[in-house]
Length: 247
Ligand code: DGL
Image 1 (cartoon, protein in one colour):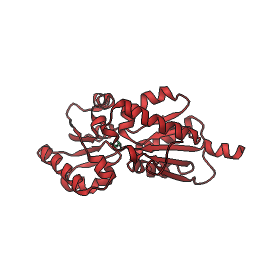
Image 2 (cartoon, protein in one colour):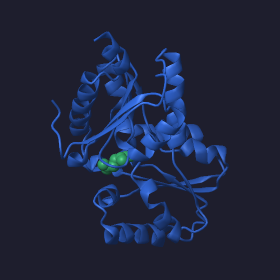
Image 3 (tube, helix red, strand yellow):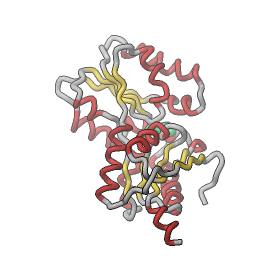
Image 4 (cartoon, rainbow, N blue to C red):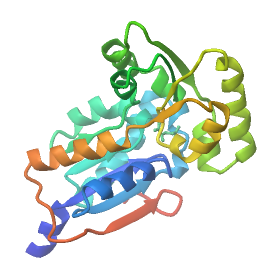
């Protein structure tokens, strides 16, 4: 019994509206291998990026409660939409848990001194106060930042609808092809799956995502909160809302 409790202390919960957060999970395991992970892919409620904040709070609260019931002390919100819309409120509501979120990598574009940056994200992320804050804090005076709400893109990726993906990218390219785009922030964790397709339009742009930054922040929080590693590599359990109910 005691042994089980100790093991669950080292459990890290991760969630997203489907497959997107797996791009973060890979990096988490690379940087913090000696922990057990439970990943909840909420495909049933995809897309998050076109839902109201109230709906998102209900959905994410249910997932947090589920992960908490499985013994997670630290929860990674592997989704820009849920982070920018809900993380502040979730931190207040569940003040016994540690949350690490994912935000568009606008700071990375700042650090690398890019001049013309596209920020691709869901409509909910683009319209969030958090994105506004990031631009206020990290936009260079000599930098143009173009915000692109990508309606339907995360859902097309989740359901592997290649034609829809191509149509959306073509439309974005037509609008920004004359803006000398040198960097694209992938502000949704589903977008790293289509890096090749994005680069086939914007050939000279560097694609930026926040996965490494999230994994390093998790490492810092684990140390800060004294959540010690297991003696060896942990386990990874992946579940999906299409196959399960949150009980
Ligand atoms: N992968 C998510 C994000 O990072 C959400 C996509 C969606 O469900 O709209 O924003």
